[in-house]
Amino acid sequence: MISRSEIIETNKMIEESNLDVRAITMGINIMGCAHPDIKEFNRRVYDKITKTAENLVKTGDSIALQYGVPIVNKRISVTPVAIAAAAVESSDFTSIAKTLDRAAAETGVNFIGGYGALIQKGSTGSDKKLVNSIPEALSETERVCSFLNVASTKSGINMNAVKKTGEIILDLANRTKANDSIGCTKFVTFCNSVEDNPFMAGAYHGTGERDAVINVGVSGPGVVKRALEQARGKDFEALCETIKRTAFKITRAGQLVAQEASSRLNTPFGIIDLSLAPTPAIGDSIAEILNEMGLEYAGAPGTTAAIAILNDNVKKGGIMASSYVGGLSGSFIPVSEDHGMIESVKVGALTLEKLEAMTCVCSVGLDMVAVPGDTKASTISGVIADEMAIGMVNQKTTAVRIIPVIGKTVGDTAVFGGLLGYAPIMAINNFSCDNFINRGGRVPAPVHSFKN
Picture 1: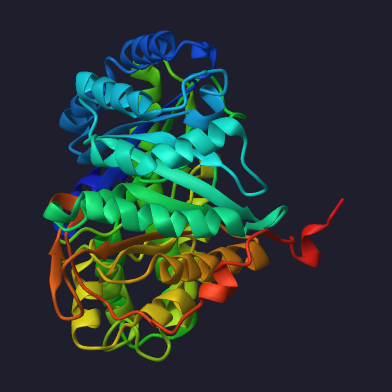
Picture 2 (picture 1 turned 30 degrees about the vertical axis):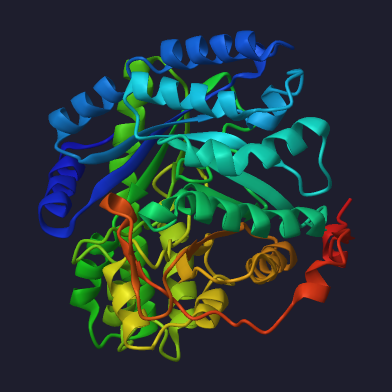
């Protein structure tokens, strides 16, 4: 039960510290839409989504108005399309992406996720059709997001898929080069992807989920920063306690929204995702939290330790506030969406290699990183392979959302707009990894994956 005092405190965090609910995401099972004829499959998918989510946006707006809690995004995720469309006989899946786009527009959501495949151990015929369609599908749609899970702790790393993914990203970058290769912002590569993630671009509705669920992603970097201002000069015990208590309060706000949305939409509540997700706004930055913890810039010595402390204590506080915590539940460190991270890159404090080190202890990965447009596909694949290895060995979710911005180089800036923000082009190590990537095959799972 949410108390009146909690609501009052929540309103204070909204007014003073940029607290918001970053996303209400309705997960929808489209397995029942299966049909060999792609036109009939598309019709069924469109009807299922538009009927199930017809009141999602209206309900989110109503809750935000009643409680004064900003709900930034209303989104939909569906069963991984490569699975749902396995019976489709057509060799081209692009029309499915366009159907998802139309359904998203009809319901009024800003993004729809699930145009993806789980290929960590190998690819089916349906998987291959979907993978091959990604560049065209994402360049010709506005709201569709796509993912590929190419690695897991239990299966190892599908290096054939890693190689292909680098090629997909470069193709997509070229197709959308007129807009700073923005198509790449809608595509993410995963290791150990989760079935209940409410955040884009990697959200999908897992096969172990119910027919439809409501997942909520909370946010609140500004709230944490404001709380830490009261703990300046105190030791790490006091620092950790402050983060835990603050995370509890943030999560309770998300729980309130989740309960209301579930009740009003007559759809089961799934999970609260505890992730701290920044925006380009001043005062809503993960980097600013790191500054408040004692670092001159994100990327300074101690940054990885600081992220580990932040991530762990956000989870410790959050799991006491909700019985159903899931999704990614970590600290997002996207470069383009965090003005403090952008500044750190500009002054040279934050490099791609330091970001990679930080991902070892947070739950997201290399996110919204812009690199020179002349970067080779094999180099992109090498970066992905590194990040997949971190996730595989450490038994955690990691991801890569990298944008080779065609026509731009280090020192330039890519502008994406809205919550996607803008990003300075980061230097990338261009020493060749061609022979490594071209080996192909599958990297076996680590020895500690065998637990049966």
